[in-house]
Image (cartoon, rainbow, N blue to C red; front, top):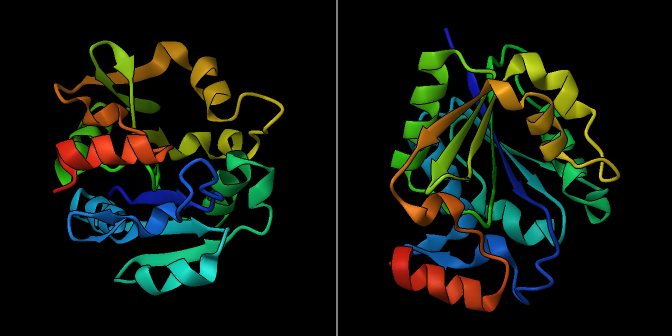
Length: 198
């Protein structure tokens, strides 16, 4: 039986945004809360939210069955440290790992489509694609757990694992550009909000 563990990265400083990304309003709720619910509704068995910058402001919005948070004290070093902090906290029985950042809002149907394809194909890595370009969330078989724990900022982070197993990536065509939405700036947020967030 599959045990899918999702890691939601929400540790960054939101410097380009100028506001704390996890608490941005999205569909009537803080973005972090929306993302956690979406991951659970989309099929994740557990969600580990990795916090860092101003974590004490975000923790009240991280709750629910199968949901917990870890604080990454090294978040300023880069995203790889947060990914690794999340992986270290996963259930030992995890069979598959789903990776998403808080600033990549995804509805449950997208999570579900990626997970279904990943589990059905028993893939090593699954990546959604829109118009031939890769998106998120990414799914990994737990066989890659050690490789994921070894990523570094000096290397290419997650990209290093993707490139090492390029021929084994299960690409899932999804006819919705939301799989590529990434909210980095206030302008990105306003555009995404107008199209998807209400």
